[in-house]
Length: 565
Image (cartoon, rainbow, N blue to C red; front, top):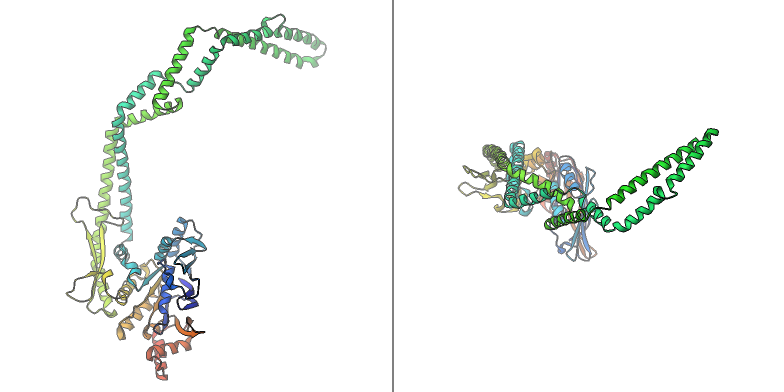
């Protein structure tokens, strides 16, 4: 619910703070006092565009701030949006602030975080319905017919089944398209892939082979100098006189004799033996290395030729050796897919056809229920309109779909397009709600729909403006009763000039205009029992309020069962 509304420097309002209550809140005041400014302030909160002309003369900008206290399911929907936008929300409190500058620029924040106008409008659609001017009506949006009928008829579960079937069909279609595209691409490149695979297989490169060949070629290129170094090392270690192996053997023999006298030398003896063995192994490795350096020119040419073949292969395919080996695995997978493509394609097509059939079945089942329940609810709502000033009116849900089409158009919420149409008099053609005349008429039609929805409605705050235009007597009484009935399940704010509606409120706010220091200022007052009687008396008799009108006002309050707040 909307708990508080703060307004500053908005047209005639210099500063105003509204504390709203659960149930029915009414806003009254003399003509021109500024009641429409409250609606204008709420427009800004729910994301409507701003005009610099709303700023009070002499002020730099206008500010409107609204504080909402939310519960599920609205809190859940708001939490989802806030999470998508990366904004903080404690699951209960939402504070929206909108500022309009004299330059025409405006900015908005939600819980102190900046928000775009488009995002604010999305929040506004979840938070509140403003029924007055046509462009605000949520039930006049393109998808309103589907949303309203499905809620009234309890078809949300059936619609969800269709949505799930639609998602499954789209997933199957995407899989089918992917296989078709892959096969088409493979078939176009098949000869090229097979040639590439054959080239790679014939050369049979090994991982890291290019680096090993590079090292071998470099070694043979420097074999003369390497041979000299190796020979020097061999002479020092094993072949020279004296050499390291002989010296280590002599040392080991001497220490061995000493160890016979002192066992403490045993560890040193082991170290010398290990060094002698290591020296011998090093000599053997050096000899083998020297032997390999004596390879014939044919071996060197073979290495060079192999290296050149690898280089040409990698250049031709613009891949390193490692990338070339990975690509060979991919080619194998693609060629395997091509071989099994017919079976894979047949399976994907069968899955898609099955998913499409399931989606059509779910859509047509939903459509049949919509047609049946749409007729039932059209009759109920038409009866509901009669006491609201439309004695001969009828309202209808027009469910249209592509009957008999092999493949109907799959909409996001079904195979149907649903319009809510209205006619005020017998014999007149029904027209879409958006073409219905005045704001008062459209608001009363919306009131009938909202009363029918009640606990099914997704919005907690309902705002009615102009709902009492051109009505009185029994119609006004019926409107008031339905507003009070609706307020049992939703918070309702109604701008009215009719006392029989105002008397049914749980909280009564009054807009008064006065001149202060040469400036006209509009203020807002929350009425108590006494001031409420005076306001209702004014609404009954204008400036000629008498004790009789006050008694009538008290009777209205008693019959309206308002909570006198």
